[in-house]
Image (tube, rainbow, N blue to C red; front, side, top):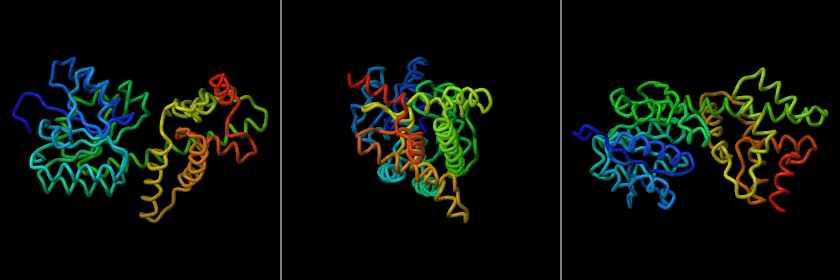
Length: 324
């Protein structure tokens, strides 16, 4: 770690979530007159908004590593993370660096990376996040942290009130944060299936969607109401060219980790399996039409299984207006 009074921060990975989080950190650093965030992304132009706000692009992840004490990572999946960690681990400047990883990966991947980084005297903190891109943009994520206590104390000031509304410290073993995240993703997927079926039942029975939504809103809490709004408002089926609130591919990956972990432990997550089955059909529907689907797009599949169109009247009307 640097002997300076400040910690030099770097960011690797600028997908929609990564860019939102990195942007909030750079804003914080700028407000505090601290050294700017250095960043790298495979497509470096993704970081243009960061550069415009004072962020410093780096030509490679290893160059970023040399100039930073703490490196945040936000990549797409286990394979991308493992490839990146292997690249960083071979560089001599990795020693004494803190790697804080927001990627949702299998717990066994986190455990393996912890061991890999220990062998080169680096520290790994798992920091999976709960929330969609709009929540990340608002700095209102929930972040689960697991790793050495001293390293967590170092990075906490750049999380609470910057990226997150709250932080949960899970313990010293990074893989436990991923067990929590995986379990949480399974819980999040359940209401998508349940409310998809409920709204479809309402539709085929002639009950207005808004009436059922009001019941959900008044009686079943904010998360359920948010999912219900995505269904009846059409966000479950984004318009052509529109970025989903929460990508279906990530939903499939994340719930798949939970289903796989459960099987390793000798049990089944049957609701998770139901979600994955419908999500696969939703992805095929979107791929045929060149659309990126939302993680709640299982609603369209539940509708078609009941003899309804994939698109609700709200979605059809929206798309027709766009075509005019």
